[in-house]
Image: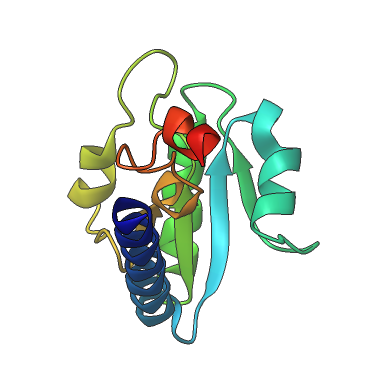
Length: 131
């Protein structure tokens, strides 16, 4: 029970810290998304994306240029959630964003960090079943 309680406290602490960080990043800004087309509908539900908010589909290599263009137009007014770790079987080119002068946790965030994460290893499925 002690390990379960400790794991829940850690999850609570992680959620609180994540919410505080995101709140500071988003202060006075809107959000926009760069996401694979097949995942757009699920991202709309998870992040409560409203009509009119920017979603740039990661459709092809040209998509990164559309992302950079949109980031330039909205810089300082918008935070882009990058919702893909890979872009066409390559690691997402965050270096392209930083070379353009964009700053992580100011102009863009690695959006998957704000999705539900798998349970802590300290709380194993077999442990929960045994309870």
